[in-house]
Image 1 (tube, protein in one colour):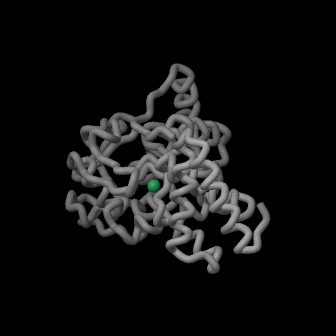
Image 2 (tube, rainbow, N blue to C red; image 1 turned 120 degrees about the horizontal axis):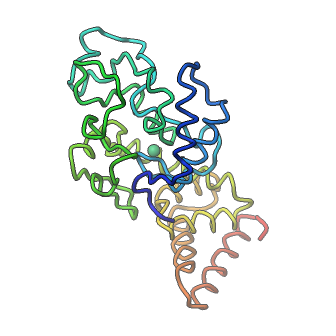
Image 3 (cartoon, protein in one colour; image 1 turned 180 degrees about the horizontal axis):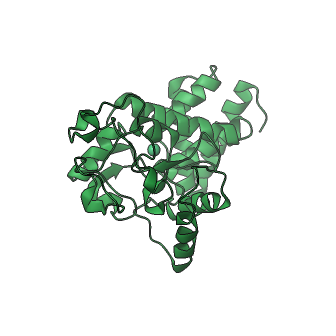
Length: 278
Ligand SMILES: [Zn+2]
């Protein structure tokens, strides 16, 4: 599975963007057909990944993906007049919002629920002391702008253990705001991903194979997969779950038939012991 770098538009996207901008006098709603089309298109352009943490978006459904306004569309509820024009990092959740950009496609990206919640009303405009009329270029925004920046220029993401390292100030602000260096948050992200995968699989062997596949394609951590597996199947201990996932994931990358056979044997034995079908 490919990672998401930046939004690269095609000619047809310009017409879609135009139709979204034409809604500018309407109240915000995700029900407009133009917004639905934009959301679907962004999912494809983002390779079905969250623009901020790169976690795979499992489904185009509520709870899995959210259409995020990079600059918040509305005011924060606890809006202090002094703080809403302050450029201090800690004051940036106080904002008047940017209702003029609620239908600006460059202000819209797909994010996962966890990142969207962490970001909240964070206002990333570099200089908030002056009001703006036109949508700002990436140079005037504090963090990685998926419409203009390449993600890997700003954040180094190690997909083996899902750790994020800032390479630039923009990367630093993204990591801090979405809490991508907060271990509790990362664990939550991983477990959400693993639970979503489990929910879409049918029965123990399929669940193991689905999780193992995402481990072998580096879209999931083995630790989170073990966590959700033993949570659902208390008869499985941590070591056994870890070995099972490792062997199955390795067999998916291997062309060695013996590896495949070993993986099938181990999975069959665990399935029988847990009383499930194959
Ligand atoms: Zn995310």
